[in-house]
Length: 310
Image 1 (cartoon, rainbow, N blue to C red):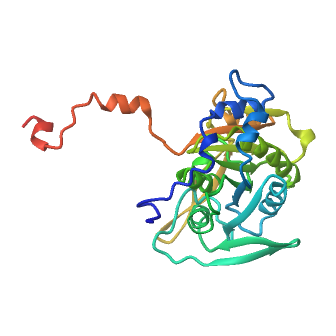
Image 2: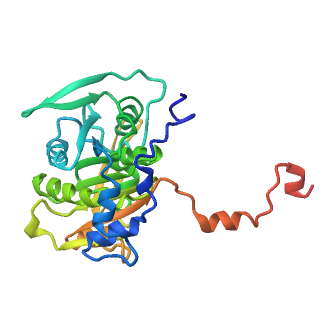
Image 3: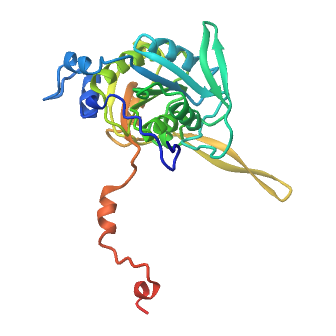
């Protein structure tokens, strides 16, 4: 079978569960039951036809405590396969290195064998696992994280954590991207919360092409104000460049960071800044439907003379 971007394998695992709307899952995370949704016992029975296979990756590298604690917590939910970059690859978004040989290296943590690492981008590592290491029937879920640093709003576009999860969505595998902000990088509570959240993902089965981006504002449960579902939007800081003293004829620009003043109402960043765990449902398909309809009314013609009227 042909694989890769030219003809990807679409691992639509557990197709009998894929029709349940993602809004049901999100409403559950806030503690409310959506109207018309099936009872948890019904969906659990529908998904209990075999082992629940979870692919875990990240962009901080296989040595990050975030991925190690996440994998450990998720082993209580299903069978976990860990494939991640061998080193730090933050900010890689969904970039891949096509046509380049990949080497899969066994990796261990203090508890023994953890998984494998790849000298590649996060999305590349995910692609390799989805193409070459998937169990029969494919992975049921992909979880990317836990990232050291929040990825709400604008940061989601640049994030390697979200980018790797998007690769899962590209292959038809529901995905969760998990990130931790704040000053304290203790991944224990976020890992435990994510495992509980994944249990709901297993029951409710969001449709293919969806990534649930989860962001923690703090590492301790008693420092969290609650859970909020919001649109991807805003930025808690702005990254840019400022010009400094040149080096001869070479102009030099230094990175700068400016705190954000406000964020869009209802956005994940607004809730995150307010101390809440945020969940934003993202789609692989970035088509703007309004502009798609607008373009249909434009005068578009491949013939230059017709387009210019000459």
